[in-house]
Image (cartoon, rainbow, N blue to C red; front, side):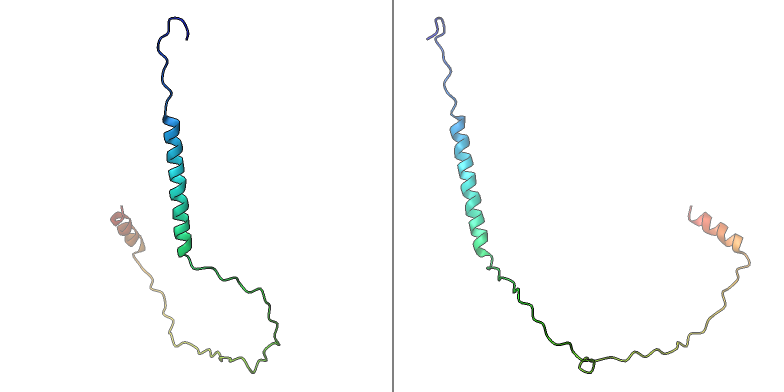
Length: 96
């Protein structure tokens, strides 16, 4: 002992508590991973085979004929607004 000092602080037990928390957390994480991993269905491996076949002839493919018909819409002449300035002023006043 050092002369004149009668008190020595006790060791802290915080490291043991921390280690227990870390161990508990790792255990819970591993248990959770195992639980959710076991619920997933196993993945089937994808086939890597390549099948090469003869090309199909055009007669074997169903074709749909495309028919274009002219429309019967009449073109109208655009209206000429005589008071276009007045319309613009009213529009600007209403939107401000």
